[in-house]
Image 1: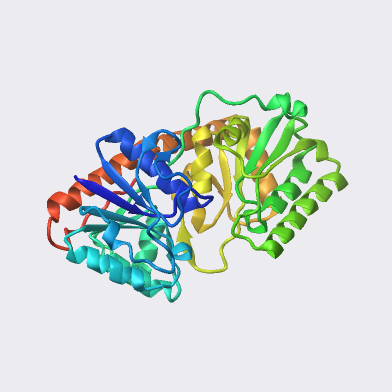
Image 2: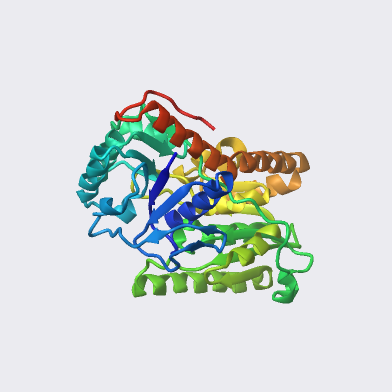
Length: 390
């Protein structure tokens, strides 16, 4: 294996950027001699990833001008494809075809499968052009089949899971009332489709039963929102605060608003009793895994979530509620807190799943894939039918 060229957003507040950053770090830990080059639209730091791994970053890819092939070091080209980032510009297909003609090996990771045009056509073309395709779940694999994409060279590699560090910050100095509290932690970008209001309404129903239980809201509005969108989300947060005050549990809600550093988020997650994800189903038919969820579940506490595509990859390792409403959510929280055997069962399940999908294991599966396409397909486009199911 000579060179790996990763085409992705990088060093910005973006799920794909974070994914690529964790992946590159893990790849370099597994095989330090790898020559990895990042082709990024934006790069705040040209040489370092979190001060750990030295990787050259080139500002050569742009959504409007996807002509990046002249910057490629020939060998493996790995595209972290997400429809919302790459858009509908089909010139990327021309660039990738040119790279194929120069005997490069093309790997595509489909982070999102969109079941509507024009993305169906683009995803089918990318899957056909690639020497290997990665999706994160069986649900995504089936979605590729449904849209008619070529799936015989598709490998299922789960989204990597961040492993919680042992050393964390003490939050009690910032939030004195945290002492003796058991926390339900809700983290990530704040928006109505994440179900914060459902959690508040559910909490109202159970707060008297669990006097030491509290909510921690850690997150910020999405940076991609325009001024009007950010105003709407500020109003949403104000509505949550007013609801807590009206129902007399404002002293049991801890807001940490803004983009939390890794250390800060780790500190909140380390205090978590439960993680909740009552996510709403997307209005568009899309299939994806949630990087936000995989950033947190390594803490190893039970997870309760809604029946959406973004939680499909967790399988039975999380408690999934059928109807995404406050009554059923409150019932699920009570059920898991009142039954120690059930609590311990889901805790053990998510801990095993988190270790199975650690970034180290995900990196090893990527290296296995890279080696397979190199040794099985030095010159041709297709190397056979195989999949890895985690």
